[in-house]
Amino acid sequence: MSVSVTVVGNINIDFVMEADRMPRPGETLRASKLRMVPGGKGANQAVAAARLGAEVTLIGRVGADVFGQPLLQSFAREHVNSDFVRRDEQAATGAAFITLTPDGQNSILSALGANLNCSEEQVEEASEVIENTDILMLQLGIPPVAVDRSIQIAVDRNVPILLDPSPLGEELPQLWRHADIMIPNETEVGDLTGTQVSDIPSALTAAIELASHAATMAVITLGAQGCLIADTKGARLIRGYPVQAVDTTAAGDAFAGALAVRIAEGASANEAAVFANAAGALAATVVGAQPSLPRRQSVERFLEQRGGLERANIEEL
Ligand code: RIB
Image (cartoon, rainbow, N blue to C red):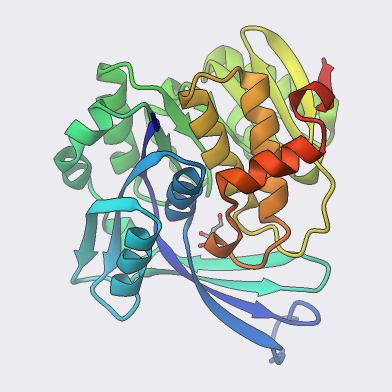
């Protein structure tokens, strides 16, 4: 039976422009290609989980503009329940302008638009769904009060919470320490713990700090290097899979969705992280946020070809 995943988070339309290099300040540079694709961290993680076999409900907000309706239609195609995605008459659909260069680097400028109107009341309307889900996924692309309300509802019913603290702004949700699993990258874990993270030893220190004062399980995402886990069993580095990366946009979202699905399915932290590393690696091989999110079969085949969990590179720290 499928596990249920609920995501409260931001929804964007992504404008992806491919260029030979990033534009310099004051420069107008011609892009070779423009793609408009569904994106936004919350929506990406919802679609990632759905493609990996979960029953997913997304709570969020789009504008009542030309982008809102197609995004809702895309959720229907992805079998993501969007009954709790509101159409906002006052604000535009969130958008991200992504510049992508041939080396796979990207730079993202995003305007959160309608996502910023996602309110406590809107979360409250979906409280029954949150209370009955196997895992709740949160990020920080919506107002902290909406994240706080989601955390409170989940905590009251012992629903496990996975928090991706991104984009990390000035104001954190007050209840962020109640998340069971946190998946910051190196910069974010540095900011959250007040430490300077520049290598594996410093990431380890920050992860242990995070796991002792906040989440039960801290998973530091290290991009192509994989991830570092600190939990009650200790700490280990789970190496990522080398791939020909063309665009890393949403690779972290593929990782998050995969980790959540496998944890909800009862997999061990190591097993879930290996699966998540594979999903993230596959996402980096395709251009665009949601177009790149892999399906369950692809992740399983990819892992099988690399010897599965037995051959995964796991280093106790
Ligand atoms: O995590 C990737 C996402 O970040 C993109 O889809 C873009 O919308 C930005 O929010």
